Length: 161
Image (cartoon, rainbow, N blue to C red; front, side):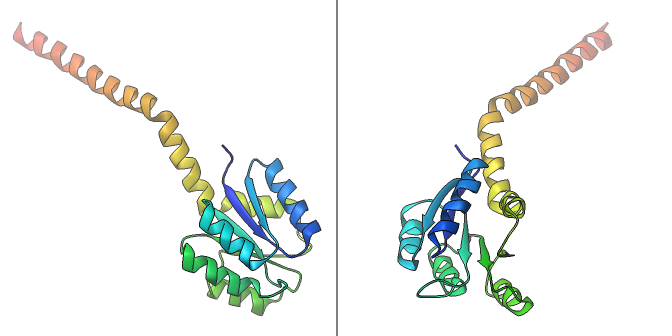
């Protein structure tokens, strides 16, 4: 199981492939889409933890696509990716629901940092830890209670004498 399932939407197939390879090398599962219809279909068919969307797509803009994705899944965090980065466009993207904003060309380490910092990643890890560590956690809790019970019984015996 990877760190999370990321939907990446960009009409540049070369950049899409580079982002996919970078994220997969960091143990993310990646679904790619070049068009709006593919992205909407992917979100309806798969569990997506986070999406990275290019601001300028062939038929639409990334913010409009983000809003469509949010109508399907209001909780999906979205990172807007753009070569046309301005303060105004970043503020607009965040105001309309983007979690974060990256400008092209981007440092691959910054992309990975953004993915690792997203709420989906923390929530995913917490679910995984809870499921994997539950037996050990219960053993510690019940073991602790048994230890308290034994001490209490010993103290009761001392007081009876």
